[in-house]
Image (cartoon, rainbow, N blue to C red; front, side, top):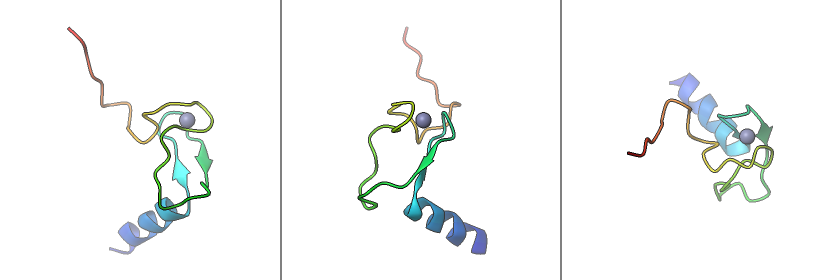
Length: 55
Ligand SMILES: [Zn+2]
């Protein structure tokens, strides 16, 4: 349970990109960033395993 709380605190204090591992602290912590400020990926919070394939 402690681990979950700590993870949540880290999330609140800042964000981490799943794509380039970039970590940053947004000005507005209540609003989720749309893109990673470094790699500009809109899927920065989505792990790579989620892949949408088009037919
Ligand atoms: Zn990134």
